[in-house]
Image (cartoon, rainbow over all chains, first blue to last red; front, top):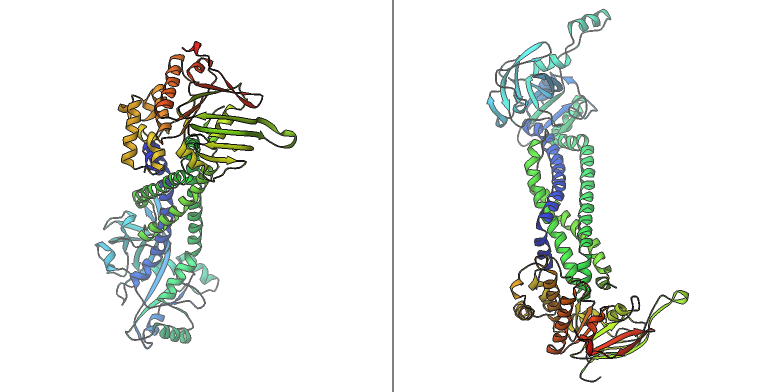
Length: 381
Length: 237
């Protein structure tokens, strides 16, 4: 039996292909949007994964240090360390700073940690060049995407920092590149006031700022101890907010990127809807162009089922080709985006399912037109 | 119904609209057409030629009356089958003013489409189609697209398509309207040959009086009735 869809597509193959490419670009954008969302989740978990700690201790009644500001004393790490079950502790700071890069400023998140401490903030697997921090002052490890080279000098505040290491893929929960500096440098940057401010405070009868503050204390536990129980003990005795690694992950994904993901989800849904409407309009137009032929076919006795099969097959083929082009397009451009875009195969299959359902839905409009076609329209007079 | 009769129409009525806006087009037409006959259907524009053709072709439903196609009564005040399209596919071949071939199918596919839908195997339908194309002297164009053929060649393909399902009836709606005199005569002579060779009834709607002497009979719609006229053979071209 003649396959009408195959013959029709072959007859106008170029036009069909270009149409599929156009719809494919739209679907490619849908994939990119999903990839942006996936990228946000991955970014949100980079720092958590790199630190790989069991417990986060932050200022009482805050969701710090990522979702809310948190200040606690650095020496808390020593009292935490003696709690039963705690193995290692570290004090960390996180702050947004602007790095001078050529003639512009680039926003980064600076992670402050003690290079001689028990827990390093740098994941050794990310270090692609140079080394970790080995001095208490004026060394910096930067994300390689920033464009700095080893031994470059970077001025932050009043001090100049020497680039001693380059890391790959280290970003904050917001997708900003990470840089690592010593805890002392970080505290100075974040908590120490300028000399004039200290003098002014003294004249006002206020004590100077305390720079021995940090944003969080993190801790790892000995094997066999319940994270939840130790977290509960710390919370009870130290009057701090304490989060397990899973709770911190929840805060990051729920509080920080939930709205963004909803926004992207809505945007993606609108794009899918627009794609469906466009496919439907294309099929409608393609059907309209064939109305004379459809009337003739109906007149000479071709059953509706065969004509409808042609419309549905063409729609599905259009959707399938558009999906292929969409994947190619998204894989060609995703690396050009400034923030991480993660293209995952299950997402592509999900989109494939949506496209097929949308194509079937879109074909209804063409099918309706076929059913309503008047065979007598083929006869003049 | 006699064995030689291919179409028999009894007291067919066709009205459009209702009440005050009712328009009567055909009011009690009776005629029959035999196998092997080429019959011209003539009437002034708007008199109902195409409507009558469409009623015989099971496209337009009459208001009342009876229609026999071959030995099957297909209409008696209502369609006697829901499958009017099947009747068209199996019993009737259509020829139009223009060739109206499916532009995305090549010549052989255009000719074999209906017979393949009727269940004839691809191989068998291709063989029969090639015989028909050979009959019309266009077998060498079998794999060409309609856009690659001349108007005359396409019209021959359209006639081949109308014959591909071995119909009992061929309904031709002004098949010569777009042709010059020489080609018109060729087409009508071809239809006459088909009527005899294939033993089918051919009903041809035409405005061209010059073609009438080539036909076996003339049916004219006059005062909403169908009357039979004598063919003046003296004027044969």
